[in-house]
Length: 523
Image (cartoon, rainbow, N blue to C red; front, top):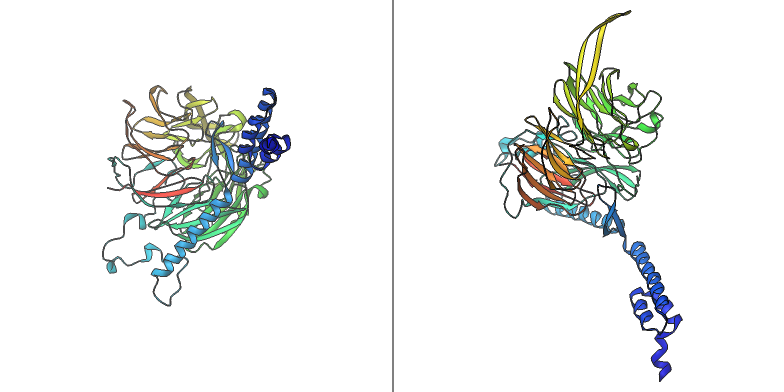
């Protein structure tokens, strides 16, 4: 009788049970008549086995937030997510087939809204079906401003209702929107995928993919750079340097290049992140090659190199077209400098030292006026206002231009990490290491700081800030230097959200590495 009662106390029983079912093994261990020291050490060992099981079989991960410190435990099973994504896309196709006329196949890509005849419609097309406003990273000027139309500035207490919501592949790219379609790039298993979606329904219209898988344990996996739409073509750059130019209607490939191999450049620690910039007849990319191939222009139609320039290691910002001191130029923030570069041939006009730890510059520069640029960086660096001027100069080769750049002010009142600021009526609004702040652009003086939104993103529309928080909330804040005034907040999508939102035709699109959704913001 004693033997039958005490069998569970044997060391072998505890060992085998702990390996097969750690929680039960822990209970049996503490029922054994043994020393406390052995029970404590055994409990630690069993706990380690249990955690290993959770990591290997259930995808338990300790996920870092924007500070780079692992803080959040969550279960992440990529295969399960990809299966859910594929089921969602298959269900969309079945639904489309069910509503298609009998005997007619479902087109992979519906007719472009611009080609439809408004006269035969019962009512006008909604503005997001015809808009070609938000076709670039952070908007038409890459400055995070939405000026196409007025937006709702009074939101329901329960939050805006999504027009649609569905799973999406991994990565940190944003959307660009044109003619009723939203384009982005995402990770699906071992492939980078450029996808076109119907903005009205979220239905996938076409995909184009290639084999590439960028992995990074601290930041996360997947492509980073937002595609660009220009004259019916989509310019998409993957995290490993694959640049593909596609027909926006069908997804057909026009040309492709790997900008790293082309220019003898090494990839960055967190992957290629600069959105391609189409200007005039060129598409500009930032491979960061050291042999005069840091900034590269390809012909936008043929893909042939037009010019290559500079030797700076690049960072994670995207190039911008600006007019400074009366001269149209490229504004670029590399790993070590803020620079003005000619569009025609890549000639360096001016340069200002801007080096952060490990060369990690991520925030977009802000054009304050025709002679001033605001720049900011995290990692304890801070912000600066640069004044750029030019004057005539004479030399042995005759008259030329002399460019001068100086710092008006520098301080740590705004430390944008990978969260870019916006300018409104002379004031800069942005996330200072995760906390919303307002500073005077002319003086650098902080007006206020408040509202912990984590490492999300900020846009400006109708005199208000639209903020996506790191946790996936949507927030509306009045853009005023007087005080922090939060007007509305609700949960929009689930999961860590570092991706920039996008707005076109009054429709707001948000996404992260797991989910995407659309909300109507027009009045």
